[in-house]
Image 1: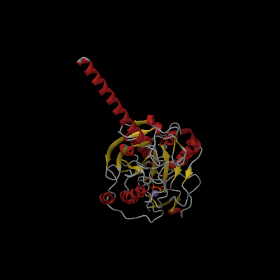
Image 2: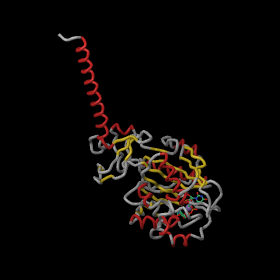
Image 3: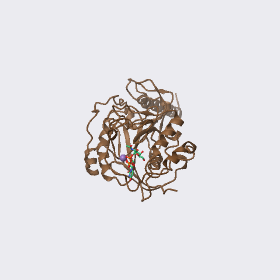
Image 4: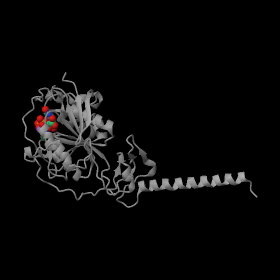
Length: 359
Ligand code: UD2
Ligand code: MN
């Protein structure tokens, strides 16, 4: 016969074993959701899964292979909680793509554009609800801006539907230069890079003029092997290349590469040169840049005069001649600014910034 005490301790041992078993089963269920099995499902080795500061699941992909291309993935890939439920990857060519189409030149109000794009979240973010973006990257689209309200409205009206058709996880950031000092496109993009990454880590960036409208949604806003000129064929130049190694307009960069080239130069105030300096950084630091093929990289540029606050920079050739000496010292490493306002508007995250003045 067993004493009462032995019996109760045995019951609690049994209960302990049952609890451990239950925990193991539920943990295995969570992990099997991560690992998935069919080829087009999300897979991530359980030990590489962690949570980022925003509560999103992060899969550290090093040594891990893309199910479709079998190419190694080196960047971090991100999943939010919903993705754990074995969502399929989005199609390689989403049925939503329509190819080349006429851009709309109508300037609707931001309220109307938001109403037309109900799936865009506050701050200008979208992610597909039924599938995981194939690139498994968050993309930050950064627009350098001041006083081009009409162009902004036309851009947003085209860009949001375009990016949603590509089934990307993207966020649009508008980096606006405060005050009346001479415009500085490069510096604004650097601020966009740093501030976007403070809000959430973005492995992929697209730096975008406000007046360029993509015409062909086969032009993927993503980050291939090297920094890429997306606006390779502009209507203003009869869809022909501007010049060899031209790198203005719309370009894409992985965060890793953008850091490797120390970002844009900060020293170009006014029109011209900052794009050529960036091109030189990429070619000397990374070996090459890519261009979107001309049959998909078509853009319309909205017609405009030179802005009063962005006069042609007479220093640009002098700066470019000695550019190689400044790659280390001028760029992300020397960036200084102060954010005046940061606000999640319905169609974009607005960053109003004081970037100082020339000299
Ligand atoms: C060309 C390049 C541009 C850049 C520039 C030289 C094309 C299509 N674009 O632009 O990428 O290299 O030469 O600096 O070839 N902006 C404002 N407010 C201003 C001034 C500029 O928002 O007051 C922004 C806006 O995003 C604009 C961009 O800066 O699209 C470039 O300025 P631009 O459009 O006046 O110069 P553009 O067309 O010659
Ligand atoms: Mn322009």
